[in-house]
Length: 270
Image (cartoon, rainbow, N blue to C red; front, side, top):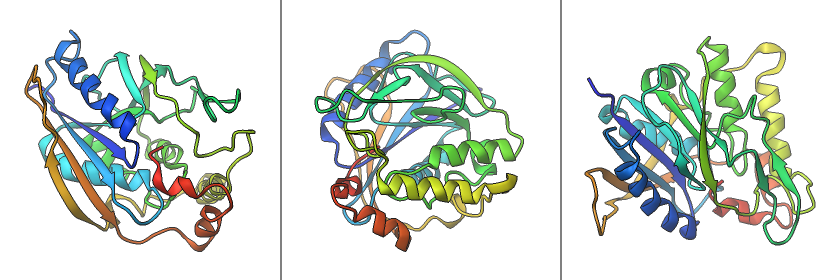
C-alpha cells in the first residue's frame, strides 16, 4: 500500500516566507517526477500571540493532528524550499536537507558572519520519520522556548532508544533571515545559552529523559482553515491551524528572553 505523508510546518509571523513556501511546495509536489505520486497533506501550525515561540511543541501538535491520516511525517522548516529532494517513505528517521543548509547567515545585510552546521550531527531543517518511530520516543521535547535545542534533543532521543538515523542529500533554497540564536557579531543570545545548558543537563552522563513531549501536550485550537489553491495542479489538503500553547518558559528562560535586544525571538519562526 502507498504510504501517506503528512508535512508539519511550525510557523509564526514570517509572512514573506509563508508566501514563498506555499506555492513553491505545491508546484514541487505537482511536478517533480520523484515525489508527485506521494499522497500528501500539509499542516502549518501557527503559534498565536502570547508566549515565546516553541518550535518543538508546534511540531508535536502537528503530528498529533495529522497522525491518523498518514503513515509518516515530515517536520519541515518554513525557510527551506526543495529543488531536488526525496520525500518518499523512510523506514527510520531521516534528514533530507544537505545542500543549502551548510551555512546560514547571522544577520543578512548587516553582518558577514555565518553559522556552520555540523552535518554529521545536524538533525533539523527537513526531517522525515515513520509515525511509529516518532511516537516511540514521545516526539519533541516541549521544554525549549525561544530559540532552543529541540532538534538536538530529538536526535538524542532516537539514539537512546536504539533507533537508526539516516540521511538523504537533498538540495534546497534557504530563505535567509536573522538568526535567533546569535547576535550579528556572533555572540550567543542568552536564551540559546540557557537552552543549551538545559539540553546538556538533561543528557548528562549518558542519561536523558523522554517524559515530556506528545504525552503532555496542552493547547487550544483557535482557528483551523483550509489554505486555498488558486491554480490547483494536484489534489492535496493544506491547512493553517492557529493554536494557543499552555504553560510557558521557565523562570531562567524568561530572564534570558527579556535580555535587551532579543525580545523579537518571541515572535519569530526559527
